Image (cartoon, rainbow, N blue to C red; front, side, top):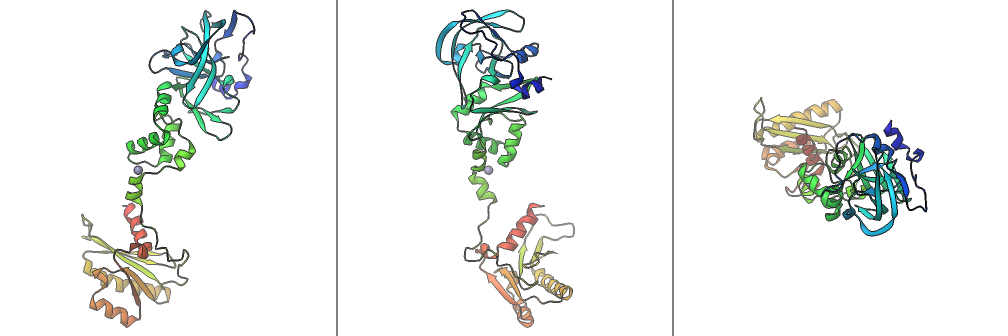
Length: 355
Ligand SMILES: [Zn+2]
């Protein structure tokens, strides 16, 4: 029932329950926090204070004035706390929580939890509540200003997360977690953060995620771009007019059948991939002849051109004779210029990544 209360904070009846211009003003403490009074103790004054996001609180309040800046004295107010007793408040100040600056935060010594009043957050912000927590966003650019995780029935924010966020840039933090999680995709890192599984990333914005760059990932996973001189849409229009071939191996562990190589034949037009598993490199020629005989009969058209890197396996005299007798053009790409043989190299990667 309290979640419902929080999702619609404007319905709260106890916000701003303050009688003005009286030195002995009584402030309602908080309906939400009072309802959960029996919860675990929250630190208000230790090195790592916790703040509760409260739709029922009329003001932001902290127990320890050290958390605030720009302290000033105010006429004494009284705050009614959960057990009905009253605490005195004589000072107020500013509270910096990550990117969020709150003014008029009351110092209430003896308060058992620090409170962020939903109703008193700046007009330029809006709250979003879900089952994992509450997020305060900047209305203008959608920036995440504060994220509170749902713990023990309360939306709470740990100051350490915010202090941490202040000392390191959000991009650095994201990078740290990316490394800790074994170079995990940053979108999944953020998913863990939203689920409350990792801490310290509440200030990371969508821009940080989009701009994220990990050089190790680029070097490790990236492949050279296609050679720039090749037009983008140069795919052949007729089956078997261009067949890309490449030999992969040797595998460190042979297959059950004793194969340590595979030959990939990739038809440029249909994108059909054919794999032949080989025990040794020299079997590639036979496998290639078998492939050509089969596809030509099945598709009723002829292989016109074959593209491979300049590996020795496709360079023997027997191979050249065979190609010439069939009238097949063999385009040999220099071994280092993988970009020119990119399609079949890409196919290899896909196959090997699936292993
Ligand atoms: Zn990485």
